[in-house]
Image (cartoon, rainbow over all chains, first blue to last red; front, top):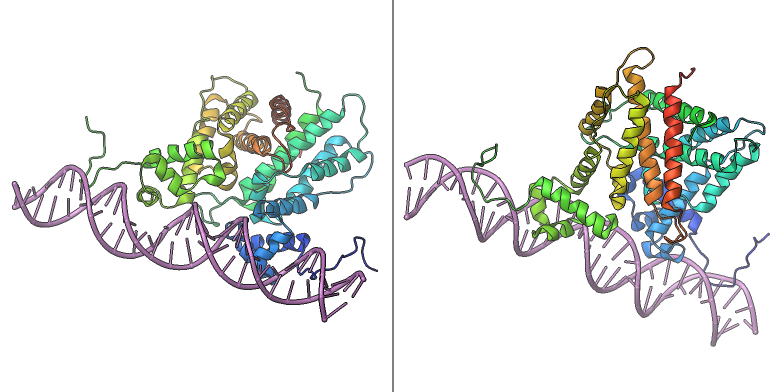
Length: 198
Length: 198
DNA sequence: GACGTAAGCTTACGACGTAATCAAACTTCT
DNA sequence: AGAAGTTTGATTACGTCGTAAGCTTACGTC
């Protein structure tokens, strides 16, 4: 029943990289990104801060793990035969949903880029459903995918960022952001669907 | 010869909010965002860190001032009679240029949103050159402007962010980012130019 | 039980943001 | 000229942070 990778003795671990990642995300959700500290993550796991360094080289790597965990959650199955720009739009909406589930964590995506492995995985899901050929080249799908991704991130940042002097009350409504998002996403996808000169 | 705003006595100021803003940007350019500290900004101005707090309420406000200074630099004159989507594209390119002049400062835009005043100013420059009417409503121009802005920010973040395990050498070339940007921008603007259903 | 090993704990250091208090340098009024 | 008032910068100090170094604990294997 023991998993692969036999233990070769030693004190049993209380935490793991995965537990640390989840705890960090929980701290971000509960206390905000600016209050995230190694000590607080350790506290949540019943462990001293220095214990985390057995599993994570430093704070930045921990945050990168949170980013990858979040982003990987945007992976989705796409029915075969979907128009490639529809697949893009579907991915965009899914990615946005995932980001907005953890608003306080979104700024992390700005400082800690998604790892190439995760990015390739997400792109692969889209490519699996899309039939390349003609004007639909791999380069074009990739550019579209990346463009949708940065649009989603930029838009989510705008939504979760509190304007300098603004209360929550006078901020724009979620419905406004939804409409803005759908309009921009539709424009982007229609633009990619069209055969563009130059 | 004395400028407007008479001094009402008191020790002459060595620094000002503007000087602090410029010094902070210089520190970011020279040492990176993660090495920016009040002490270091003060050092660059020949002043102790605490002196800054006479002109800026806290570090976050200082960073917000940097953001507004940067963003305001993207204001541009647009010849009248320009197609509104061309005006959007011009703004996008200009905004991107401004951001890439200070790569290390770009992540600031993710955490410290542009103030409404600056944003309105930028939008106003576009509206001044565009003739509203028909399908070109103010709402549509505004949505287009905001969509281009978040796309530019997201794209710049992707470009300036060093991938987790990557050297500068194996990173994508500037030319790749240029092509990606132009493709995405063109798609976005063409999409907004088209009359979209829904 | 002794040994090797992996993990958590303790201690410590330098840097950070910033509150509170004090000293200095100007203008204005007498 | 000098006193008063005002604005600015310097000093000191506190709590928190990331994390390096070394120690202790709790396992599997002989």
